[in-house]
Image 1 (tube, rainbow, N blue to C red):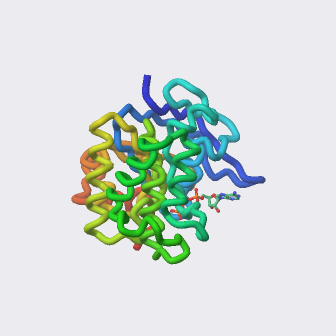
Image 2 (image 1 turned 90 degrees about the vertical axis):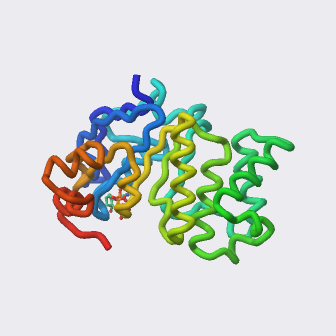
Image 3 (image 1 turned 180 degrees about the vertical axis):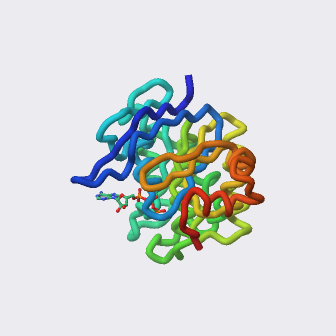
Length: 240
Ligand SMILES: Nc1ncnc2c1ncn2[C@@H]1O[C@H](COP(=O)(O)OP(=O)(O)OP(=O)(O)O)[C@@H](O)[C@H]1O
């Protein structure tokens, strides 16, 4: 059984269909990347996987359980594109709040807060109010929050936007470490060198999943020398 099983998922908003019959399986410990032009439906798809949104038809199962499922959501880490943070609270208070929701307590909670903040290089800014954080710092704090409870499945919607290349690299090293330890990761990105680090990629265009494969398979399939060409071939629009 695959860790994530997406079967014939469609999502409509009013008369508009933004996901069309998407079927996909993601294996345990895989890093699966979703690529596609802006508005293609990547965020809508990851929201359906995370159980934040529900497919109009079709099903999403994680570990054999149909989503959305409240119990299962505690085992999923989800980082949204727009940071869901309490601006008036300090970073530490934000982390403390989310850690408590996930059932972390006492010394274990404190240790995990420090570990995740170290990981995103914000350990010196725990006491700072989020309102005083830069955009990139907020992204890093959101990432730390999504990692707090060491989820089995991690869903990241453009996690490294606004993050400098050095830190981006260390975040990817951490994602690779998590995957080696068994975490399944689904990540959306517009950054080609990040896409290259994914085990497999899914190309989304106008609500359809039009190609799936390893970065090398996708390149070979169309005779491209790099992923940018693959993106342009399948996406039609060049992203900056
Ligand atoms: N709640 C909603 N109501 C109506 N339309 C929506 C809603 N959410 C998303 N859409 C539409 O669905 C389409 C897909 O949006 P989505 O955010 O999934 O794209 P995306 O591929 O993630 O884009 P980006 O790369 O810019 O983040 C867009 O045309 C968007 O306007």
